[in-house]
Image (cartoon, rainbow, N blue to C red):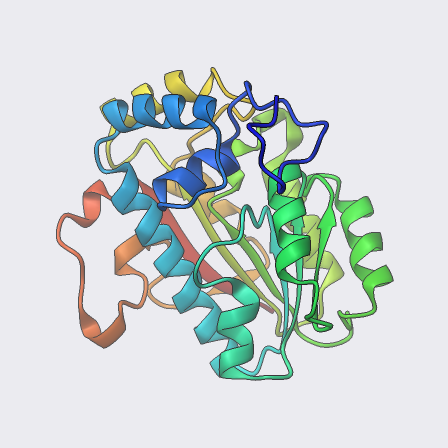
Length: 268
């Protein structure tokens, strides 16, 4: 059953909620199904700030991309990119520097299908359907696109995705593989859910997401910081979402309720 929508791949199971489509719903998007919306409402019961957190996470992505563009980065690898919505990486980067190139990576069918439609007329951006934890396949696919020069700095973006990587998939090792593949002067932008800030709400969210295709694994501040091994953290370090370089010095109230730590690091 595909709800009669032309953007739905014929092979997709619309009855199994996915994190990408739940996130799309929380951001106010339209690329989600009844099962996603039903579970998203349960997500909201467990974490009433979920829509705000989704917005803050998207805002962090924008600020991080602009920071990297200001630092001279002109090529971006967006891992776990999700369903395109307002303010996509290629739009932000190319507005700042028209020559910017972007490769998106996701394994979710709707995310990839919609990304392909969006990027149809953009010869500086493309999308790969791969699991970002299969680093060899991703890196080979990125090289095959011809868009990314691994001899030059790359902005590696992992925004709101590592909390879907279980411990047995070695998230620190996954980050290290990308770190080792990119040139010095490259950057890592990362955000992920934590139980440090709102433990009770996070417990509820984890329980809800067990019913989806993408269970969630929150991590501590120390565990998230460890992912930046080999990178020099950009000030202010690993902090709640709204505290990472807020625009015009404005800081959202109740940063401790952001639910997600975020940071940016530069490869040594």
